[in-house]
Length: 199
Image 1 (cartoon, rainbow, N blue to C red):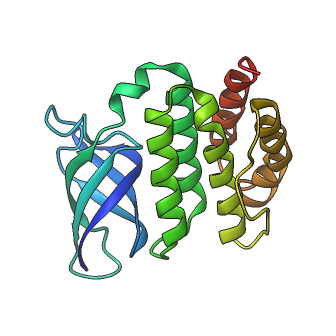
Image 2 (tube, rainbow, N blue to C red):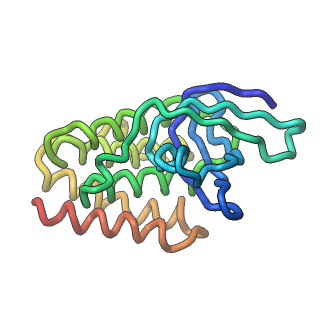
């Protein structure tokens, strides 16, 4: 396996003292995992933040081996992690993606939609500018995983977006996250509480 592609880092788990096992969402190859030597070191720690846009190079001698990954930052989401609401939204979307998608199956619409949602979260003046895109990504993810759903993201005021968020929540929990660690859905509940304060 030899792959080089733009990617969105969706998970980074410590491995040993300084390495990281990371998961990347790519357009052409879907969700791929890789071993990043020195991922917790001074140079790479700011790169290995879920939500970051990166250029990843993966290489492995066989399909059964965890590939080694070299990662270059192309766009950092780090500055927005100091703000509770954007940090909660970025954390939820990346955790959901990492938990739900199967390995090495491409979902180009999800790659594009996740990138768009993360960009909106980081650059919209407030959550009113990105909450609809976040729920739209949830709806698209449900549809791509075969559970149906609306064809477009919710439009309208924050109250309508929150109603759509509340409506899809049980389906996400029941169909996509039923066998996953409770922490993934807890991230969404925290985000919902923060958004609710704006309505």
